Image 1: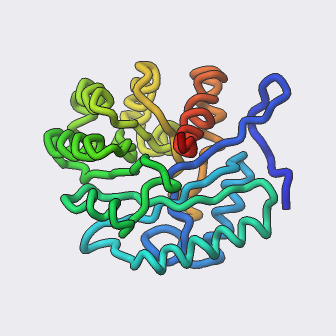
Image 2 (image 1 turned 180 degrees about the horizontal axis):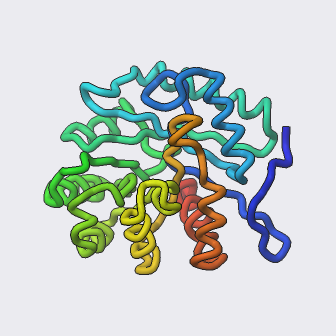
Length: 252
């Protein structure tokens, strides 16, 4: 199967999107509940112009601790299925790490993976975590040579309350990811306005779907890219959805 529907066209070239944060692997976290749903989510991603996906199953102590061998088994299944269905869709493995004191050791021992075998690490925090905790974790990761990507940064109270905190995390080497749903207003007007403010101040590096299921948290990166292109211009959308994600795959 090929030739999915692209949503954006500029000077005769299609924008091929990359989704760096989603939960498409079946039965490993709170994402796809089975193989059938995983394939439907994959189809939705493809139909919206996504041509490169990093699947990022949760890892959180005492909540999401699926054995890495099982995760890799499900990843191999999804990757093989994608190759059978589409001739131009790439699937890579990553992890959405909930911040904890063992993250560096887990990365070094490959207990869990960085994004697509890179030095980029997708990190989430609890909503009420202090800025001091976030800053400490970010500095530990950058000090060890990693590039932390803060997952759905718009959710954290300490960042929403003071945008200078985001600027400080960027200064220390963090990258900022926001969710497509938030940009589109699916998480409320205040969250949409905050994401707009971040984009206007050039404080967003990635927008990802964070897709989990068919209803409520479905893939919507294509619709979001169309919206961002309309509001922020083609060059901005190209940077956020194509160029910045491509840096993850640059091994140099």
